[in-house]
Image (cartoon, rainbow over all chains, first blue to last red; front, top):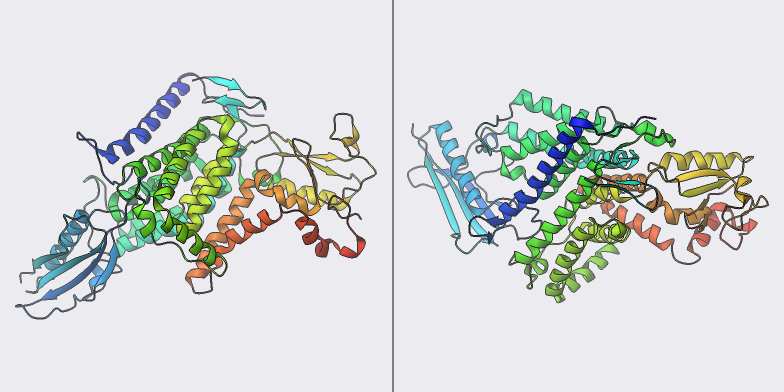
Length: 149
Length: 422
């Protein structure tokens, strides 16, 4: 019969680990949920806020234009972001991200594509919020990036 | 940190030594959900990440991105670690590796995050703290080596479940979508089910839409109560029953990834283990009895059942009404309180005695069925509800006798207690 005992200095290390674990598990969700120093409630990741908000719905269109012409598909768009298509709209849900994080992602994406292609086109991400977004978020947001030759 | 002894003789407290079977069962349960859901999902995230040239900056600038070669290696190692966890080979290393890789991937892109993934990775980390050394084959063998392991990982799992329910409830108090409005409940898209269960879902949805505020308050109250119950040992039994019903209801309503199944796995650390308080009676001379015992022993991961020859059970301390004149060629179980379950009746108590194997079967049914459902073969993901429904129906009077009749042969007749005589 073998008994795995916790004794001596190991027990102090274990106790320190337990305390650290509990402090993180109790404090982290609290500060995520209640913004400091105002203690205002907010939805946040790592706060065990399952199903506490309806994920904002949006449609994103990725395309490119030249000299104010019609929208053209971005060639080989899946090379930049796997699973995306162009120029058709793509319905999405911001389940675990904020509206600002969605804007930031697509702003960075068109900048990345424009830098990579350098073909004189303007690369556009057009985001139309369709449901459950916060009132301060505009209904339509577009990001443009010029791909200088 | 105190240590005390409870009425059943188990030592409780952070540094008490406890039977390793609860943590081993939790490990196997988590390994199953890891293999059927977590690893495929996170390997798909790695695959998608390395297939794209565009990435947003990681949560911290010092976190390295995944390369093609690194991604392939991580995917392979995740499979290896999940199997190691299941079989009990380097389980601590495997659990910590899976947890670390998961949090690494979440830190690379916030779109990789989900609450159910966070909970799964947290439980994996706690399993990585466990001192149990029980391989899957030892777990299935049914014998008790007498090994013990420190209790504190079990205690942390219970507190973790409590923390999750507490913060989920707190969110419902402050969220404008919940509190007294219940607006989110009324607008929530629920899961589709097959015939029969679809009707139940529509009734359920109608009730939610009719009383969203009441449902909101009830959900928050229930979650606060569960958070409290898990911290108080005398209430664990009721907590497990209420918690089981609640998370299965969530699963039925929303199918929230792994959350319901991981929470059920966490409940395993509140089950009794190593007490051998259930008795399996058998006839020494009967070969089918020994086969039955071999089967039961393989399911008895928590070491709750002891095998006793019926000839010895007539001793004065034995449960009443047992004698050598009865044949014990069918399943014959006696509960710790002396209640007898014979033949098909045994199926009634399978879930509370053998929660580990029942959990694994339900998970395989859910995610195996989900695999088929996703490929257009019908609502096979409803299988767990049908299985649970069948177990519930067995508690109706006379049902076990009616069900067992065609299996055990009606012409030979049945005894008064539902057992079929030889």
